[in-house]
Image (cartoon, rainbow, N blue to C red):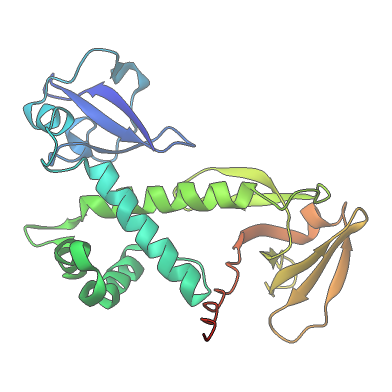
Length: 252
């Protein structure tokens, strides 16, 4: 997530938070929401970017906070995102990224969230602001962005010495890129013509191509490297590896 200053509609300069891949505006640091910088249903104008320091009092309060003061919203969102990703990896599936899925996850995790429990309980009470049913929790967008950034970094990494086979990867918060395929990646077959979109896990990557083991009973199949971009719509994610059981304590 990128942090840059932008001039708001009222002339004040806010610290704005941007999608690190597309450059689109996500939110502003203070509680005033992104609509202090852009009008609803309006795209962000790059001419609003500025190198001048923030003049918004609330943004400055957060930026100049002394140790022990309230943390930056983006830093809070990153900690939440890291917690959600660790939980998803433990469960063996990718983290949910939609608002309702996040709410349900916060509801489930809140009782054991320790120092994050008050925050998780607040986020679990509902996605919508009670005073404005069309406004979602501001922190949700930041959490989604951090999760997307982390998953993108994971998608770009493959084990060393893996032959280079590329496939499309679509980011949840916008943008797409070509990423390498590695063992453990989950790919979705392009079913545009057939209407069937099976998902499979890559079990081998060779110079000649990849071996995919499908999840719905289809036999494993080998795809030549030139077939991969054509046959697969996109890479879902890197499947988390099963957690290793704790080592047994040797008896004296």
